[in-house]
Image 1 (spheres, rainbow, N blue to C red):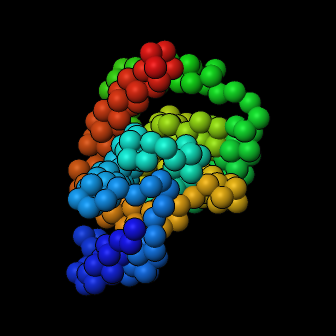
Image 2 (image 1 turned 180 degrees about the horizontal axis):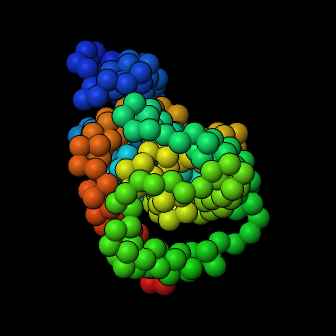
Image 3 (image 1 turned 90 degrees about the vertical axis):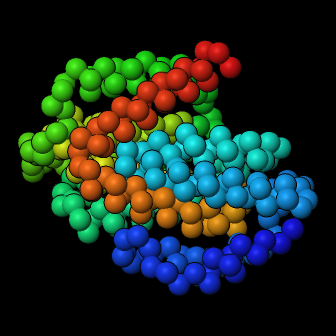
Length: 303
């Protein structure tokens, strides 16, 4: 099956909502030819069903990009959609394809945040470096150990995060970093490594955990924490993509097609976050964590 969507998208000439170096139109032009290549993760449906499948995926990618750009958790939308549209495709291939989209969308959000929000590189850099290394290691380890314990513990960890955020009414409302020097580097690397390893082994809620820890440990406000988390999340996604790509578990054309819409969603998400500030980010954070609790609880104990 051949999709004409790429050529259609590459013809767009309107600027995106926010001017960043990696614009939607530029990305669309870059992948226009690529997404016209055959997509064959399963026997392709015919006619309107095929078009509807890809429209659903592109819509899900847009919504996932919007949520991810603000507080993380976009995988709650896109990953189940991929599994629904391609039920016979190997899970590792769908997860690898999702990482292509995640790297593009999160990178766009990170660049856009950096243009508007002051990023504390002394924290972000060691966190991102540790996250990349440990995410890659986690992706390797997951092929050798069971993840049942992590799956069952996740809902309770998320409940603790939600209760702490609800109890502390001023949690994340003011930006007043408290760590510096060697202590800042140490805790940044510790957080990046721990969350990176978790992302490589399991994954759900990585962005939300990063936002929470940047607020809790470094006394960031939610907006600054969300901006910092994007750069670390790019590192974890890129490390996992390296592993999936090396092992041949990526449908590149599909990932790039969804990335166009994921980037567009991330631009809308960053605009909303910067317009409405930390109070808005905090509320959406609690909503996403609540959904994660329900989803992870169902997967761990009821499925």
